[in-house]
Amino acid sequence: MNPLASRPAGDAATPPPTDDPGLARERTALAWTRSALNMAASGTLIARAAFVGHLDALGIVSAIAMGTLAAATWRHGQVIYRERREPGMPPHLQAVAFGRLMAATVLIAAIAIVVTIAI
Amino acid sequence: MGDTQPETGASKSEPAPANGPRGPARGEAPSREDHSLRRWIAYSARRERRLEQTGSDPDPRFTFANERTFLAWNRTALALIAAGLAAAQFLKFNLHGLRLIIAVPLIVLGAALALASYLHWEDSERAMRLRQPLHYSLMPRVLTGGIAVIAVFGGILAIVDRLVH
Image (cartoon, rainbow over all chains, first blue to last red; front, side, top):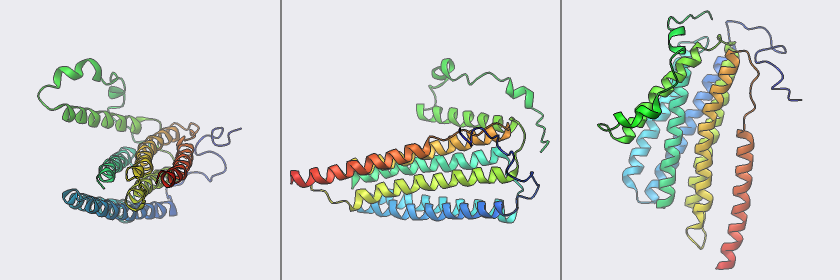
């Protein structure tokens, strides 16, 4: 049947829980760095497209916003996982950070549609 | 681990958001958008608190893995949005508007995945806190199907565009 569904999360096959997440923390920090780079790249694309579509103001605003977002994303990964070395993240903090990231992505999509139609 | 919240019982018994009947009555002074934005913030704050009060902390490695999965899906969503923007800029159809048929679905798919990835993260996190089986996500199917449909449409559009010209 369905191997994923029939096995409870955090059961068998994996060693028992430890306080030290080991390299998982480092991998997660790297994932945040990748996300930050992705944000910066998307920001460049959106700003370029906006300028092509003669939406200069939108281009400048979205370039600044995406730059800030990329910096915040990068900093988040650094602070939480490299400096503080949190053993795990309190779920409500995660939910806030992810909720913001999700909202930002949806907003980016909305701007992208506006720019696409304008080109 | 044994993070006991003092308000555990209190806010769990809180009735479901009384959005419906009371919504419009208070919504006169602030604009409609402002009002629904505030309601959304209050609603997500409640959901977050509920998540923390659910079950017990899972092994941090699993939480980290769940977090990385969310981030990977979020990057996929951003990549789709970027692909849509690139399609809008660099596709050269004789009928100018045809680009939109490729570009807009890609961007919308990206936005949908961004939302779905957050909901899937929350769903998995809740399952792990309750030591319940994880749910399968619809996202891989949506992504594969979406890309396939857009690709087929792209091919058809390219042919139609050439014939019309």
